[in-house]
Length: 168
Image (cartoon, rainbow, N blue to C red):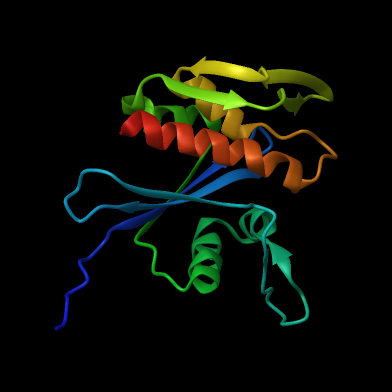
C-alpha cells in the first residue's frame, strides 16, 4: 500500500544579537493539522559549502555576508529540505514572535553568559529558570565572545526544547 505524505509547512527562525551576529537557528515544521510540530535546532557554527567548493563557511557567516535568503538556501542544501519561510530577528523581534508561548521553564547545567560592550552578564543562571518570551529570546541571542560554538549549542538546544514544551 502507498501512503501520501502530507504537506508540512516549514520555516527557519534565526536569532541575532545586538551586533546582528546570528546566534541561534531553528527549523520549524508545523504538523499537517496546524497544531504542534517539530523544532530542530541547528548549530550556527555548522560548516556549509561556500561559494567555492574549497571555501567552507559557517551558517552564521553565510547570514553575516549574504543575508537571510542565502542562509535559507544553505540550510535547504545541507538538510535536503525545502523551507517555506525565513525570519531572522533580534532578541526583541524573537520575543514578539514567541510571545504566545508564555512562560518558558528551562534548566541549565551552568550559567548562560552574554558579552555586551566588552562586559559579561549572566542571562540565565545554572539550575531551574522561568523566562518571559523576551527573556527566553535574550538567552537565544546570548554569545560569549571567544567561546567556541560547542559550548553554546547545548544551552540553545535546552531552550528550544523548553519552548517546544511550553507550546505543548
